[in-house]
Length: 338
Image 1 (tube, rainbow, N blue to C red):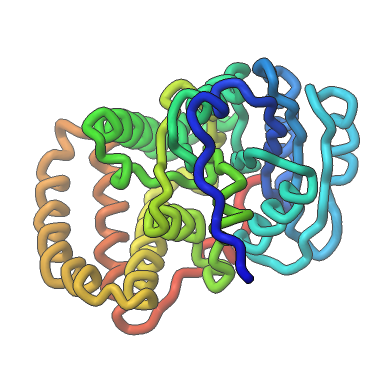
Image 2 (image 1 turned 135 degrees about the vertical axis):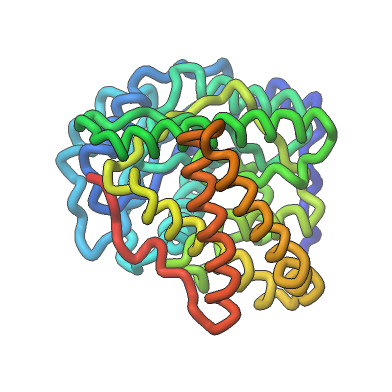
């Protein structure tokens, strides 16, 4: 006889119960970035009644980050575990992290990316968002930091545009949460807290069919919402992303917009959401094309932000059109950064 899924914890229990929290990151051939992330963990505040465990999931044929990880084993405010997931693909690595978190007895599992660092109060703020509400899947802001290598003029222009774009997304998320529109704030793994009830009782996993396309965390979010999971936002839980210089080009912005659009459209079709897929082609596509013209005309005013938006928008249009003819995204076949 199958057991019914457990209900979310009552608020009075969430507020005070001792928690085991697994802080996880997936990595692949980016030792310098991983080193910076682990260094930021070393400065983390640990909130009361929280036992943190740190986890690195290396997604490669062989372990290449052993020395970097070993250097931090005695420097973090909790034990550090490392596992190797040899099947390539971000969802495979993320799912391995969920398995390991369950084995470590986690109440909550948190994800950040290996090209990020966390603010000293990040853990305090994101756990407080869980304790103080009823959401079981919670996201937070990502802000950009400039690479340590000197940037060319064009790279600096793209970077400035991306900073403004991220700030706009952050402000929009706050406004939507205040308006009671949590379903319109997508929670993804660059700053992510998940109650393990979702994994243990609801059976949520990252879709491994999206091996190299990206989008498995967005689908996790949609699957959670479809099961009635409440999602939330922790506006003061800040992480910082370091952008590799090779991403600071307009062609890369176009490619990223194209591949994300193609993946989104492909998921709608795969899930049988024909009305949504048709709307995105018949209605949104012409509107996006009109918006592209308006963005181009506003460039003298919007400058770097408008330039990045122009190439992202063009990528969105191209992604929808190319996916109609069967082209799938391969966004994460190649690793960028070090």
